[in-house]
Length: 80
Image 1 (cartoon, rainbow, N blue to C red):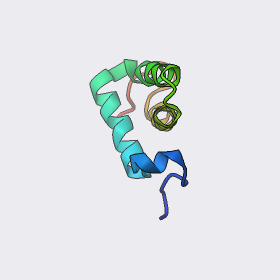
Image 2: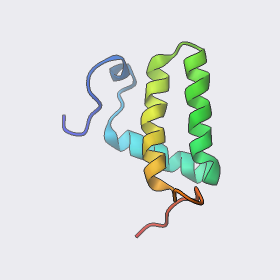
Image 3: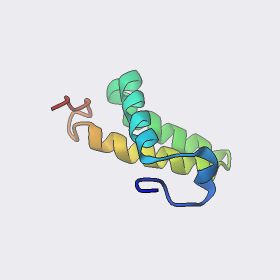
């Protein structure tokens, strides 16, 4: 399916592009300017717990958060 994450351990999470972008927007709406730091914290926690599949999902979410926030202020970008 177009836009889906490649097969592998993540398939157990049924993660697709829509879910990743929706998750990124939800984290931004809940965490505001702390969204990227929140994602990084989750990545660290999951990696420490040995949950590489979960950490990979959060890395993908963090990549999208990074595209949705201003690189200088880290405030969410306004909708165009």
